[in-house]
Amino acid sequence: MAAIDLETYQNLSVVDLSAKTLTDSKISRKIKKITNAPKGMEGEGFPVYRAFAQVDLMDLDPFVHMDQMGEVNYAPYEPKGTPWHPHRGFETVTYMIDGVFVHQDSNGGGGVITNGDTQWMTAGNGILHIETPPESLVIKGGLFHGIQLWVNLESAKKMVPSRYQDLRAESVGLATNKNKDSLFRVIAGNLGDITGPGSTYSPITMVHATIRPGASSILEWNPRFNLLVYVLSGSGQAGPSKSAVAAHQLAVFETGDYFELYNADSKSNLDVLILGGKPIKEPVIAYGPFVMNNKAQIQQAFDDYHSGLLGSVPQ
Image 1 (cartoon, rainbow, N blue to C red):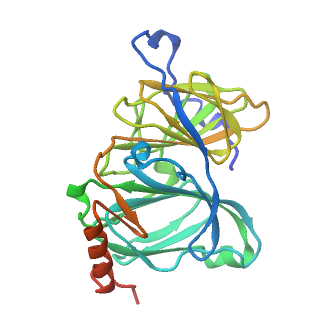
Image 2: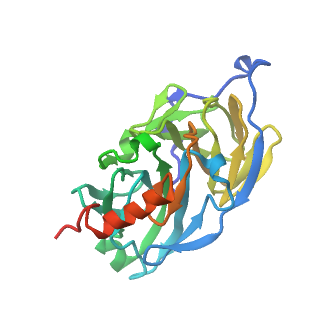
Image 3: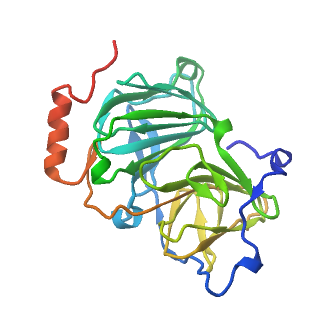
């Protein structure tokens, strides 16, 4: 994980709540559960942590699936990607923390994403895509670390035209806490007055936060949104009870107006991905590469894929 240069964000907006704003009517979100992400393999064989394993879809809504890709330091000729595959009914978000990934889809979208970049693909009515390491990474090896998140689409929008958003690291919204010892990268949605560049069909907020050793933050959160905090690296505490959380763990929060994060470690940063969204509250059938509302729609998606209606591999 790249180090933080404090001097680069001393003048950023502050999103940390002060004691003066925390009236008795404001509720701190308690921890509902903490789960451990099991290891797995994805695509052609790259290691992942299944961040949402053991969590009910009702607690995740509007999110469906998330993998932490790596963190792994590849030897030469070890890097792997995915083959061409279809999607329908949701959005895939690939956030590259360290390393390089190349995306290409059947609509002509795609490009290279590297440190801090995000590719946001709305599968909608159907698309084919592929994600691979560039030839230079395959030959030399190197660090690879990122996130792939699946965001559901409500039934009325599942068949919207597919699209691709290329979100560069420099476009991400940046904020800090009142002590200026934490950094918040807003990829989509809002944190305080800071807005991320991602355009989303489902109202969500996605933030990558780095909290320095000994630092803490109290952050306001949309009371209509759920709240998930996944620990990318380090260890810390969350919620009013200061529940312990560590790397590859997901904290699921209850309802409320704000939440608390603490890094009691004296040496290492606490890096977390903060997610929240307005629940869609519709039936979800997730099968393979498709996320729909019922089994008939899943079968139709497979039929359309085999009929070539979800696109074709560019020649």
